[in-house]
Image (spheres, rainbow, N blue to C red):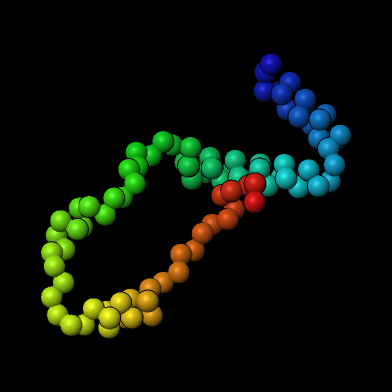
Amino acid sequence: MNTIELRQKIEHNLLKISPENLKVIDEFVEFLKQKEQTNLGKTINYREASGGSILDHAGKWEGDDLEECLELMYETRGKVTINNRINPFK
């Protein structure tokens, strides 16, 4: 099936889809367009962090301000912003 035939088949099938499912299809098409634009389709070599390498350099805690440091960390850490448009199934 060539591209023109495939587009015609999709258009024909869209005429039979409920409005709710059309919305899902539209979101999925937007997801695919964004994926093509941002090259999210590329395979990324990613290895989950174990924390081991940082612990090699951490050493032992010295001092009596651990509780203060933890409190400061909890007060000042930021929130993560997630782009929900990437997941079309939510």
